Each structure stands twice: as structure tokens, then as C-alpha cells.
Amino acid sequence: MILELIKADITTIKADAIVNAANSSLLGGGGVDGAIHRKGGKEILKACIEIRNKQGKCKTGNAVITTAGNLPARYVIHTVGPVWNGESEKNNALLADCYRNSLALAIENGIKVIAFPNISTGIYHFPKNNAADIAIATVNNFAEKEKIEKVIFVCFDDENYELYLQKLNK
Ligand code: AR6
Image 1 (cartoon, rainbow, N blue to C red):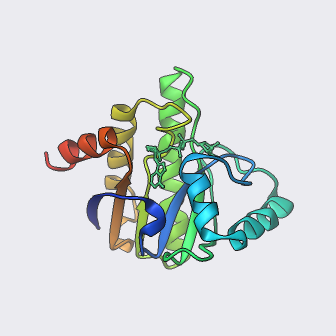
Image 2 (image 1 turned 60 degrees about the vertical axis):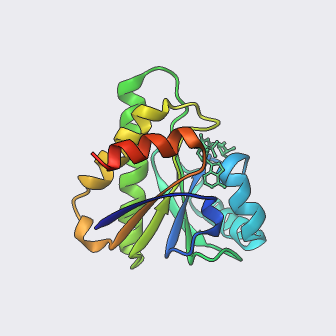
């Protein structure tokens, strides 16, 4: 598995799948979620509603997959990050679940190239340094990592980009 870092808007990335930092309603929101639904069009929301009707809300740490609608990617994997509340052990484990469950779902769907945003580090206020460590370690330690060709960490804000740059070049 190759790890790549780029500073970009994830909606512009042509990967097999891009990951969305969603909320448990799966019905859209602000941040990267808002951008994905806005640019991807209503096919994504339609698919999310179908999933909700079938299995209810998406629990924190879990992931579901839909079409990517009008986006250049093929699929969107929606995962629900934890809202940072200071309970680091619990929040850290849930954030790791997001990366792990998204990768597992990717493999189930034959996805080889997957792009992640910095889950939970925006509206959900997860400390960025800590979140970057968890994201990189979880991807690196993923049991079936040889089944994925490339993971792209897509940073949008300068702070996350600088953190990932340092950590990935170590
Ligand atoms: N492309 C890539 N990364 C982005 C983009 C983009 N277009 N826009 C923002 N980011 P956030 P969360 C980065 O707030 O903290 C929504 O309302 C941003 O710089 O999108 O997991 C959902 O519906 C930050 O580093 O997600 C939930 O209710 C990262 O994406 C809630 O926000 C995550 O920020 C989820 O909060």
C-alpha cells in the first residue's frame, strides 16, 4: 500500500472511493459532507436515504458506501467520526474504527485507491495532531493493507497538511 498526501478539495479527487466525514443521520451537513453532497448531486442523498430506511442511522465509527453521483470518484464511503468531548481513549478508538471500517468496506467493494479527509478535525473538534497520528497508524497497521493499492490523505487546511507532511516524512 502506498500512502500519498495532497492538499486539495476531496470532491476533485478521482479515486475509486472518497471518504466522507458524515454524521449519523447520513442526510448531509456542513464541512466536507456539505461539499460532497453539493457537488455530487442528489443521487448520493437518495442512496443515503435508502440505507437509512434499511438499517437506520449510522453509528459512530461505522461506514456505509454509496454512489459518488457526479463526482469524479466512483464511490463515496460515509463514515461517522466521534465528536471530541475530551474522553480521549474512547474518542481515539472510535476514530480508528472510522479508518478501519472504511478500508474494510473498500476491500469488500474491490476498491484499490481510496482518499480520506481528516475525519472529525473540523466541526467535531478532534485535536488535529492526535487525529493525524491515529489516521496514519490505523492505515499502516490495517490487517489487509496489501489489498489496497493507494491511500490518499487529502488535507484541506494548512494545519492538517503541515502535520501530515511532518509525520509521513519521518
Ligand atoms: N475537502 C477535503 N477536506 C475538507 C473539505 C473538502 N472539501 N472541507 C472541509 N474539509 P468537517 P467533522 C476538512 O467539519 O469534523 C458535517 O456537518 C476540514 O478542514 O467536514 O468530521 C457533518 O455532517 C477538516 O480538516 O468534519 C457532521 O455533522 C476535515 O475536513 C460534521 O460536520 C473534517 O471537517 C462532521 O465533523
